[in-house]
Image (cartoon, rainbow, N blue to C red):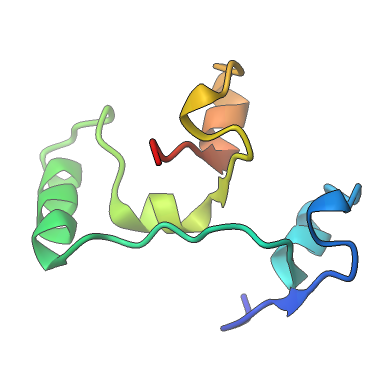
Length: 88
């Protein structure tokens, strides 16, 4: 996986939803980063405790931010695993 993404010429209007394209090109997505190291420690502690309900900070970084954010109505497991849904 590259350290940076090449901006897609179509940005938010891009219709190419393939994983290969999304891994290579950016589309103006907002990247959610952990607030501080305490959050990372809490997330890793939850993972080591076997809590499947908690998501680690690395899981959040792996997912694309859903364009609908907290207002998203797609609650399928497949969608939730692929996209993050920040409240802001």
